[in-house]
Image (tube, rainbow, N blue to C red):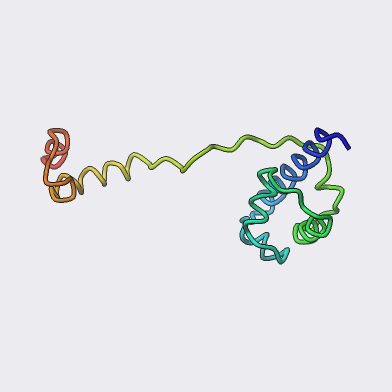
Length: 121
């Protein structure tokens, strides 16, 4: 069998599981619990990196309350952001204020910006 066909099918399964899971408001952990699988298995499948057995695909379909054919429909995997989510500005400001108030937290040195921040400028 052509490797491209296999990869396209795995990508479709991944995209459909992710989409249906999100529509149902389920986390990967909850879906894994409902399908009696490890959360890591769901994570690997949703990234298109796993080649699940038909038994796993059936278990996921049952957990999502859809037919297996719904998971096999052609679909594209939407790109996901890489890395950790960025901290919001409010968290950064709180962190800078903490550092300015507690010089020891900044290694005993305070930058001019942090000093201005602590003085309310």
